[in-house]
Amino acid sequence: MKKITLKYFAKLKDDIGKSSETLEIEAKTLSDVYDFISNKYSLSLSKEFLKVALNDEFSDWDTEIEDSDTIVFIPPVAGG
Amino acid sequence: MKKITLKYFAKLKDDIGKSSETLEIEAKTLSDVYDFISNKYSLSLSKEFLKVALNDEFSDWDTEIEDSDTIVFIPPVAGG
Amino acid sequence: MFYFSYEKINPIELRNKLINKSAGAFVCFEGWVRDNNEGKEVIALDYEAYEELALNEAKKIINEAKERFKVFDIISVHRIGSLKLEDIAVWVGVNSRHRKDSFLACEYIINQIKVRLPIWKKEYYINGDSGWVNCENCHKIH
Amino acid sequence: MFYFSYEKINPIELRNKLINKSAGAFVCFEGWVRDNNEGKEVIALDYEAYEELALNEAKKIINEAKERFKVFDIISVHRIGSLKLEDIAVWVGVNSRHRKDSFLACEYIINQIKVRLPIWKKEYYINGDSGWVNCENCHKIH
Image (tube, rainbow over all chains, first blue to last red; front, side, top):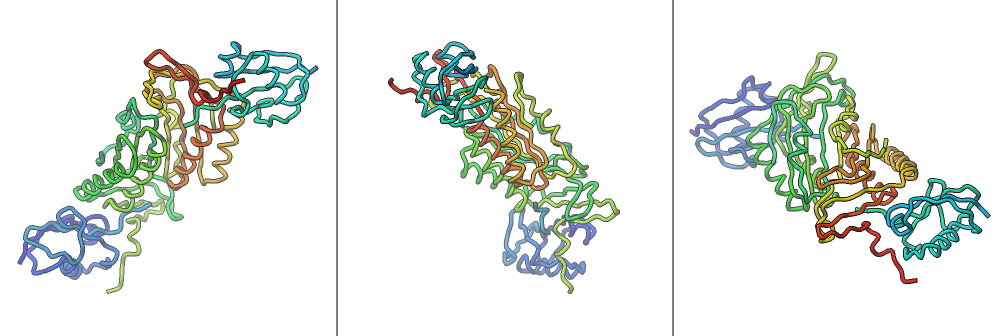
């Protein structure tokens, strides 16, 4: 079990109803974490449209998480 | 004989020592007028570096002048 | 330098920070809240940012611009919170010896900000609707 | 709109004239008096213009930009007379719905102004010399 912090923004914050949470999770990669969260909150946001950040830097879905990581799923930004 | 007004700017104004003059001239084209002025004031400014304006619009050296025209010889502009 | 502002952006104050005796050129871009987007009448909007990541990424963008173009300084500020029509949402100012570098750097910065910084915009429409821009198509049926 | 100013150019006043609820982008260029040119230390300069022709030509340039790019408004002001370091010599502001048009129009305008308008610059150097820029090579031996 790893203890991680999740922060939510924009559409995700609205859908989940909070801006952050800390939880203990049995997950290997960032992708696994999103699958867990998506299932927990019945999210309809496709992973293919999201980016992911690990400890305030952009990361890849395959990256493995560690204890006390901060993770953010990033919905499409406002653009032009 | 045609009566024309000449206005001088920048380097030409400095070299000639005045900013305008009116004169009667026996000349056909704008080019002829510059040759006359260049000779009159011993100018060292080459015509190839100048542009010429007739009645406040850019013109060509070959353009024929008429009575009461206003003529300006335009030294290189300040550029970038 | 990039930072977020929770208050109205003051363009002349930012411009004056870029005054430099050796600079012959200054270019600035301002993104304004406009009254329409994709056919809908906009009356206000909220900007929200993941600030820690945005600040890290903005520093990279500014360094990239300084490597690519011969500029002296770059300042950019992005507004956060509730904005009204005509408010400045984002400001980018650049100075340089020659103008071409300022134009290129300024456009590079705003283009990169728009695609790379985690900043989101929620629009409020005259008909009472609202929505996060660019996230209307990020859904799938489970 | 293009005009000459015999007094200090006020950039915020000009910018505010371009405020427009339907515009999402504003780009401005400022040309500043810089302290050096071609290796010489500049302390001040004079701008002189053949104003009647410059106004005619500037009108054409602005119309060309409006035909080429989707912009709402264009304002440009050129200073005339004695300028000091850091003074604004020329200001160009453009607003548009989308930013690309403002960038392109602004750069088009300043590039055309620089080559087409009959405006001359006399530089005063720290060593006491002075000279009309770009006219040092326009002489020939008769």
